[in-house]
Amino acid sequence: MSKIFIAGAAGNIGTSLLTALDTAGADVVAGVHDPDKIKTMKSLGVDARPFEFQDSDSMVRAMKGCDRMFLVIPLQEKMTRYGHLAVKAAKEAGIEYIVRSSGYAASSDAHWRLGREHGMVDQFIEDSKIPFTVLRPNTFMQNFSGYYMDMIKSGTIALPEENAKVSYIDVRDIADCAARLLLDSEGFENSYYALTGPEGLSLSDVSTQISDVCGCKIKYAPSSEDEYIRSLGDMSVPQWNIDMAVSLTRVVKLGMIGNVTKAVEHLTGKPARTFASFVAEHASAWK
Ligand SMILES: NC(=O)c1ccc[n+]([C@@H]2O[C@H](COP(=O)([O-])OP(=O)(O)OC[C@H]3O[C@@H](n4cnc5c(N)ncnc54)[C@H](OP(=O)(O)O)[C@@H]3O)[C@@H](O)[C@H]2O)c1
Image 1 (cartoon, rainbow, N blue to C red):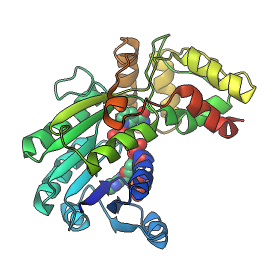
Image 2: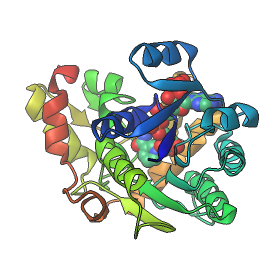
Image 3: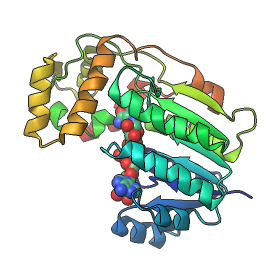
Image 4: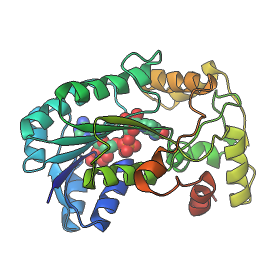
């Protein structure tokens, strides 16, 4: 039986992936950064090991005994370097297959910065000659129950996205695709999949759906790029993250990420979850 290593196991995708693999009875090792989360996971019977993207030795130690791996990298300034070190560590630890969660429309020669950062990490994996499958998910539905929660609670979603559509994906669908591949990758290796939800939605559509479920009035007020940059600065978001966020909104405005793919159904056999079902499940969080 394979032993599967999950990098970023305590994160958004990682947590759902752990659940999916646990349900399938897989043998899993969780790579975790936060010592308190390691303790909690261990108390729940998870083989949680310390994992630091800046420290190759810690990664090799954490991956020891595993032959398959899931790799997601936090959105931080050093993410490309982290990716480089993680792939080197995987090679050294004897990992034989990597499922990587990247970003939508990523490419090492993408014209936009965040797409390029993700694309470079994808390229490190391909260059390593370790068999792989790269998932390129679109924007997470869960951003609306996470990053954007305060904005929604204030009654106004203010982002510089005009009326462009995004085919938001539920994080659990990314995890289900990754779990399927980590359990059985035959026929899917050395491939790239663009993962989306089932429909493109504008932020007006999003506001209407959340308003209807919450019984409150959430409106979308398109902002200018300068206003967006100022608001992120006011929240002390680091400059690099501001640059990435702005590069993403430009891609949204170009209409590059509103299309829909069938990749989730192709990989899992089930259609991608809808925004309506996500909203219904999270209604109490916004009320
Ligand atoms: N949000 C979106 O809409 C979206 C869409 C497409 C792609 N993406 C991409 O998806 C990725 C984020 O995925 P996610 O939300 O699942 O991740 P996440 O929850 O933001 O982070 C994953 C984990 O990274 C760990 N971490 C942070 N610093 C670390 C370090 N120095 N060494 C080792 N681990 C460290 C954290 O571990 P601890 O919890 O243990 O501290 C965290 O749980 C990013 O690359 C982003 O660009 C995001």
